[in-house]
Each structure stands twice: as C-alpha cells, then as structure tokens.
Length: 199
Image 1: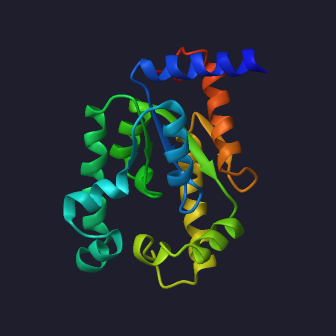
Image 2: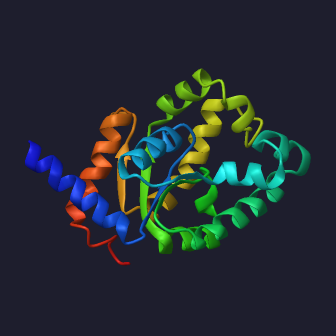
C-alpha cells in the first residue's frame, strides 16, 4: 500500500509540475467547489472558481449581478474571467455550470488543461440545491419553471457538451468528496505524468 501511495504522489506532482491545469465542469451542485478545493489541497496548487472571479471583478454576487444586468451581461463577464485562465499555471479550476455552452470558453478550457466532468443525476442535484443555503445567492433561476423541470431541461441541453469536452468523468452522486478526489488522482496516475490526452 505504501509503495502504491508513493507512486501516486510522484505521478500527481509530475503532472502538475508541467504547469497543467485541472478544469472541473458540470451542472450546479455536482461538487465542483468542494471537490476542487480538496483536490487542489492534495496537489498543493491554487484553487480558482470562475464565479468568484466574476464576483471580484464586478463587486456583486452572481444573483445581484444577474438581477441588475441580466444573464447576457453575466455571460460576458464570465467569458472575460475564463480568458484570464490562459495566464495561469498549475491550478485546479471550477467553472460555472453553463460556461461550456459558449464556444470560446469551451475552446479555452479544452486547450488549457485536463477537463473533468462531475456528474450527478437530476434528483441528487435538486436535493443538494434545496439543502444548500448558498443556492439563493449563488444560483439564480434560469426560468420560471419549478426546480425539477428547470434542472431536467437544462441538463438535457448541456449534457452532450459536457460529455464531448470531458477527458474523464466522476459520478458524484455515487461517490463522496474524498472518493471522487481519489478517482481523479488515480486517473492522473494512469496518465503516468504524460499530460492530458491530445494536448
């Protein structure tokens, strides 16, 4: 066990030492922030959340920004935030759930690092959103539909894009934070420090 653990550490660090970024994509409440922070801690690299970059740039919460300026303005600011990622080196980056729907964003994310898709089923997502106090301020509604229908409809549109961009995926509805992080680290080990496929 000790030998395997040491081997994992060497390969993870080798991957990150090449300046690679790990980019987490996926719908709301699939664990991008919690898993991203834990993963960054394990790898000893910064954790960056693109939503927080938007908030820092505008001085408003995501909800307040969208209420004041609308979704189109938010997406413009999100695009600007994602463009800044090209100047960063090794890091773990959590993206907003809809960021990948912009072709420019998707191209940058795919070019900049290893894209990992965090997946959860509709029921799990809705349950987590209802239980999370941050939902009201950080996750404004896309429509006037009830949460279940909104989630189902939005997932049906985004899932093919998530799937196309992903180098690897983890079902966080079946795995807790530590197990999900472990699966990602194991995938890095399997890469053997050679970098993401196709880079």
